[in-house]
Length: 182
Image 1 (cartoon, one colour):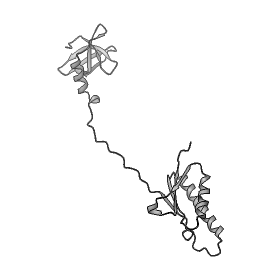
Image 2 (cartoon, rainbow, N blue to C red):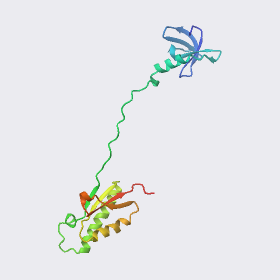
Image 3 (cartoon, rainbow, N blue to C red):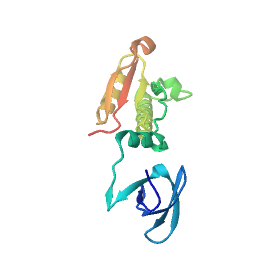
Image 4 (cartoon, rainbow, N blue to C red):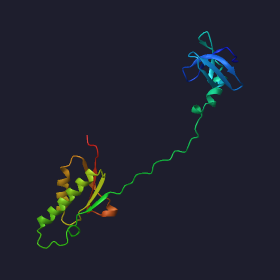
C-alpha cells in the first residue's frame, strides 16, 4: 500500500522520509536530511500528516514472526547439575599416624600433639572452605574425644556430631563448618 511520494517512518530506527524508489521488496526513501536510504518494505510504515497508520493485527504479527529477534528458540532439555556430594576431609588423630615413635613422650605430649594437629587441620578446612571434616580419635578412654569437644566448642562456626557409625564406629566425630556465620 506504499507508493511513490508517501511519507514513511522506519521501524526500530528514528528515520523518517519520502518514498523516492519502490520495488516489490524494497523501498528507497529520501530522509529529512536529504540522504537516500533503502529498506525492506516490511521495515517501514506509512505516515499521513504525522499520524502513523496502524497496520492490521495479522500484518504486525506476521512481521514480528519474520523478525529473527522474536523467533522462539527451540527449548533444550534442562540439564540438572550433578548433586554435589563431596566426601568429608578425614583427619586421623591416632598417635602412630602423627609421629614415627612415641618413645620419650608423655601422655600429655601425645594429647597436645593430637590437639595441635586437629586445630591446624580445622583452621586449614575453614580457610579452604571445606564444609565437613571428620576427626578420627579412636575409642580408648575418651580423653582425646573430650579434649576435642572442648577445643571445637571454642569455634562459633562449627557444629559437632558423631560421624557415620557404619564407617567409623564410635571413634570419630564429624564437624560441619558454617561458611557464613551470622
